[in-house]
Image (tube, rainbow, N blue to C red; front, top):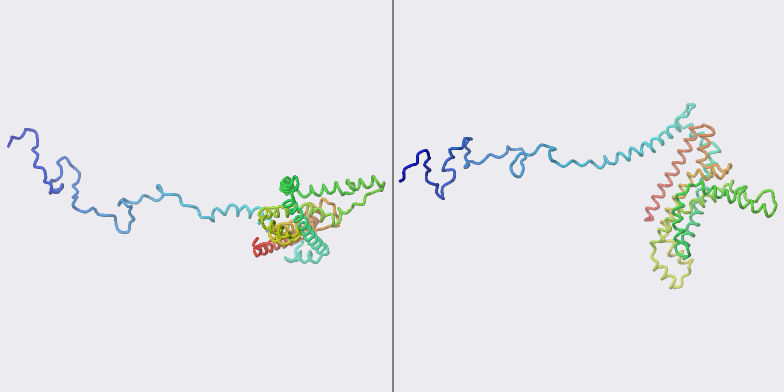
Length: 339
């Protein structure tokens, strides 16, 4: 055996292939605590969650995904805006109708308004004007929609586009146009007085309920034409061709083929016109029909002219109740009809 070199450590024999690496002992330069690799490392304590690699869980919020807000939280802003802009003023109107300025019971203002002749006349005028205007819009709108959709003529598409623009016009523009045509000093009366030499013309109907009815039918008819044109655009033209090939006349085709398909659109447009006519104020005011008093005009007269705010609020509550009731009836009918 060769002699050991001074200043060096003689290395022992290498461990065998079958011996464990721990049997050779720790190296001399290791100064930390000795861990027996043959002893199993204890796992996490019972009841504590652990990760897949046995490491301790990270603190809450460190790298975790943000928690999604409930859907009810997103609904709060629009509900708050609706309550501030609509429900709160409506609550003030109802409160004012139940608290008369001169004192008394909560329903004294209702009893006084319901027992007055002015309220009965205004209610009757409002109902018959709204029903008459709705029927006129349905008949005229259905006829014009048939012509625009099924009778080819130059400028049909331009007329359909103009109807879309017409919907954005304010109602008083139509009233002013009728005044220029049929007013006391309008074009029609001017032509008659010029050729006959009469002191005044024969057209004075604008200041009557019939003038208000004409103005409402003129203004609200496009609100019926628009949904009808949308319904006619989805109609299968093959049905019309088959009916015409079998010898059916145009009136029968309209009655048995087109009209059933147009009923949902007629119901939607007619109900919209009915509600809008019940609440129309500008047309009645600008026609100058002093003998025509509707519910909106009665609210204006009680609040502005007479300063009777409880009575005005009572009429406003009745007008709102009628409008909401008609809208609810429309929803039920349209749902049953499948509109």
